[in-house]
Amino acid sequence: MQPQPFHDHDHSHCTGDVMARAEAVTAASGARMTPVRRRVLEILLEEHRALGAYDVLQRLSAEGFGNQPPVAYRALEFLVDQGLAHRIQRLNAFTACMHPGTSHAPAFLICRSCNTVAEAPVAPVRAALDAAAAELGFAVERANIEALGLCPACGETA
Amino acid sequence: MQPQPFHDHDHSHCTGDVMARAEAVTAASGARMTPVRRRVLEILLEEHRALGAYDVLQRLSAEGFGNQPPVAYRALEFLVDQGLAHRIQRLNAFTACMHPGTSHAPAFLICRSCNTVAEAPVAPVRAALDAAAAELGFAVERANIEALGLCPACGETA
DNA sequence: CTATGTATGTAATATCATAACACGTCAAGA
DNA sequence: TCTTGACGTGTTATGATATTACATACATAG
Ligand SMILES: [Zn+2]
Ligand SMILES: [Zn+2]
Ligand SMILES: [Zn+2]
Ligand SMILES: [Zn+2]
Image 1 (cartoon, rainbow over the protein chains, first blue to last red):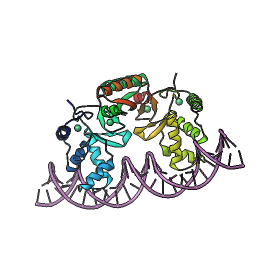
Image 2: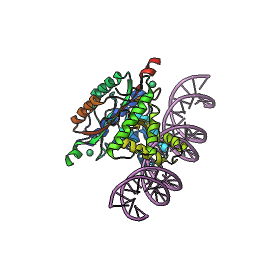
Image 3: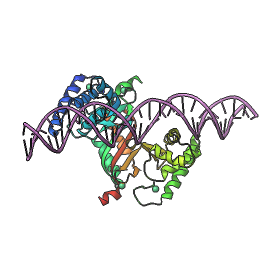
Image 4: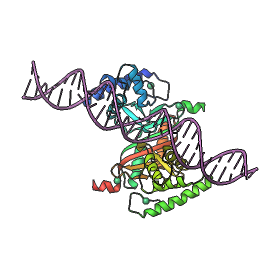
């Protein structure tokens, strides 16, 4: 079972599980999980939210890492390349991938009230999109699917 | 039949048809289609591509309109609000809506080779997304679906 | 003709992102 | 061992995108 950001959960399971997978993923690909990169992933994992590059940078800087934008952007780019984080276009922000290592196209559910970001299974969505595109002769290679709405908790209170 | 950006077509039909609909839409909603706003829509309609706000601004400025960012951003925001244009998050850019007036959620097909942007019918995609989100208790209100790939023309030459 | 709301123009600033270069580390390979 | 080259990190500087705040012009209703 995958981490369920929308429900109460032992969040240490999320972080622990994902970090372990992350180490495995990078080891397998020959990439190096350095202190900055590891710390950035940890920062992203602290909350089920998307953080801007400058938010991340601020925390890095407070911990003695570099304080210039490329420090954050490079680590984030690395994580995205490794499939350990995703970029949320709509928010100009980044979020930790909650199930790294498993091939997956992203479909993000963004709560407009509490800003929680979750990944939803995307296979049927993607199939429908491929079909619609094929009608026009267009070959989809990558798709960004970002949904704005209300998470269960915020939907109830509303 | 809707305009078909991916095929040879009499582009004046696109612009004429869409501009006429645009005037109707704004009239119906009580909004004012002013010179700047009309010109911005025309600029977007000149090509089936997405243009950045500063690209639009540059053209406006050359034609005697204001030369500061808000001039472009305000007109673009107006068009988006009226459903006459869409924002492409992935490109930080804007494109004219090719079928204004008809309710539609956006699904964009962006050719990575020639930068053409088309809108695809989205109903089935949206249904799949709603279903996937519902599984997690999430209520989708708005969705951005942006696909990157190859249009028919560019797919053939590759 | 005035008052009111709306549109436009402009200056200044905020936010997001990258290019270019310097330095340190580490692991081949001569 | 020494060199060399790849890579990661740090820093400066700049570029690209977007908004805030305020001033001015203009429409239209009363
Ligand atoms: Zn958690
Ligand atoms: Zn919420
Ligand atoms: Zn056309
Ligand atoms: Zn193309």
